[in-house]
Picture 1 (spheres, rainbow, N blue to C red):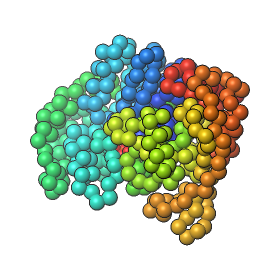
Picture 2 (spheres, rainbow, N blue to C red; picture 1 turned 180 degrees about the vertical axis):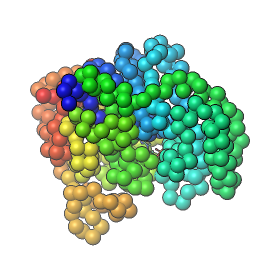
Picture 3 (cartoon, rainbow, N blue to C red; picture 1 turned 90 degrees about the vertical axis):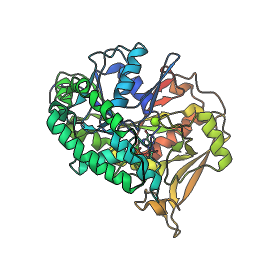
Length: 428
Ligand code: IMP
Ligand code: MG
């Protein structure tokens, strides 16, 4: 198509918390629209602007760049209370967001009963997922079960009330079965519904809006949340989130076609972390775990939980490269490794039966028992925070990046060496 602008998807290549927020913030400099395509308030995107820290849960990280239009696509599950809390907090901090935020009329509404159910199910489950408790699973269950309500339904109060009452009744029965309380649910429902008109006023047709922008040669970023290993289909099922976090989800979750996407950038942390339950094959031994968690400040942005940490796992990043069709990689938090003597990279897994594989196994319980095959690389033992050009990085750090690129089958395009906007090295 003539005059098509660029449409770049940003995806996490590990278990979330790769630093997508920072990369989106940096790339938002050169785009007109930033859109979220899946997930909800389970995401925690931390962005530093000057001395200020912002943690965004539902509003795209592009909001911190003046004038950018920020959209929530049909693929997201929207928690209206949490949304306006975030919205009003940005306004209170002086971010000019009037007229800049749009929500898809097709986005699912995440209702208070979804949050109640998420917590109750998790509490009583034999196999715990370690969810963020934000109601994500139950909201997507209602969507797939065709029981959900969408932003557009806010325009017809009678129908909305009918559908919500039925869903709430069902949920209360479930909660009672699970022995969970329902106090405060009615109050939370009133609060959520009271925000309905305010949300409806922001509703838009996200697919057509993005397509029109692309036709006019404008640039668009589609901001993924969570990561490839948390994808409902391709991740470590059942220890995953309930949406398609990967690049395919960017098309279905915004209402454009895959051919309109021009680039897919995978964000990989220079090591690996995971929050919540489920296997982490390249996990550190306890002492190193504690050490890197402290160096990297690895605590959940949404729940405050400590993240488990481990070595860079290229079996996982190769999966990410393949599933997402990566055209480039952004490596984040390289500086966290500045003081380590030696680094390991997982290149393959030894399965319980002794076979060695370079592929990520579908059997998550087998994945829990693999022994990673490691390659050792020397540490660079020098600070990288102030480096702004690839050639100024210590040769051993460059060798580490070269190896990541080689094993992931995608070129490194950016390297982040700190939380600040300026702490980024563009490559090539
Ligand atoms: P849920 O998305 O709240 O249902 O949680 C499912 C799994 O995904 C849990 O292991 C969570 O810890 C994990 N998870 C959800 N959102 C994020 C995120 O933004 N970063 C990292 N992990 C996440
Ligand atoms: Mg996060």
